[in-house]
Image (cartoon, rainbow, N blue to C red; front, top):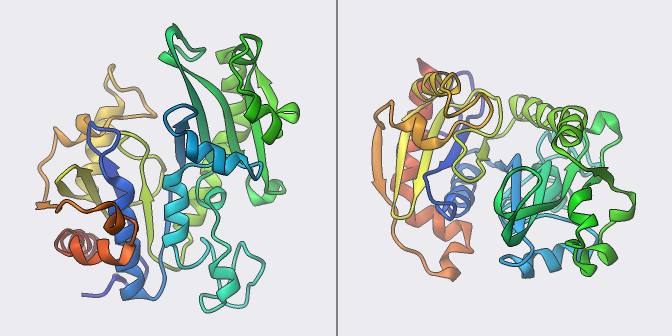
Length: 320
C-alpha cells in the first residue's frame, strides 16, 4: 500500500488524544510523519493550537523567549520531523513554499508556520483566570497572521494579568509585549479571536486542503479535532494504545457532539465522540525511552503496526 490513494492525492490524518493531556500524541505524530515521508517522499505535521505553562514548561519557554519567540516543544518536534514547508511547490524557494529537494527550504519549517496559535499559562493556585480557568491564568498568546495579511507573529496580552503583576520580567524583557494587543476581558478576547485567530486557522485549513504531500494534524489536549478539514482517518492516542477510526464515522459523531449542551460547537472532547462509535482497530504502542521518542525514524519502526492500520483505513476511506 502507498501513502497516496484516490487519484494520487495525499492523505490528511488526524491524531487526537484521549482524556490525558500527556497522551503521546506528538511522539505518535512525528513517527507517522517519518512513515509517510518514507512512502511519499515528503510529509508535514501541523498543530493548529498549542499551549504551555511558564512554570511547568519553563525550559521550553525560556529557550523560545530567548529569541523573542513563543512556541512549545510539540510544535518544535513536528517542525523538525517535517520534510518540507506546508504549501511547498516545485520552483518556490522563499522559505514558505519550496521544492522538496531544496535543502535550504527543508530547514525553513518553523514552529510558527505549522502552529498559528500558541497560548502561555501561569499557575495561579488560589485564583481564577480571566477565562474562568481554575488554578491558572493565561498570560499571552502568539498568533501567526495569514500570509495575505503580511505574515509574521503578533502577541496578545492579558491586561488583567499584567495589572495584577503576573507577567514575569523575563517575558517583558524578551517578548515584544510592549507592542502587544491588550485584552482586558472576555469580550475583548472574543473580538481578537474573530479578527486574528479564526482567519489564521482558516488559512491553515486552506493550506492543508491544498497540500501536495501527506499532512498529519495533531490536536490539542483532548479536543476531538482542531481544524475544519476533511480527514482520511483518525488515530486516538493514549498511553499504551492507539485506536483507529473511520473518518466519516468520526466526523458524524463530532457533528452529533457539537449539538450536545455539554460540548458546544467548537471544542468537542475526544471521549464524547469516541463513545458513540467503535474503532476499526486498537493497536498496542510499546513503551519507548526518551532517546527513542526523540527519533521519528525509531518511532516509525516501533509503531509500525499502528501506522499500517491507520494508513489502511485512510486508503479505504479515499477509495470509498
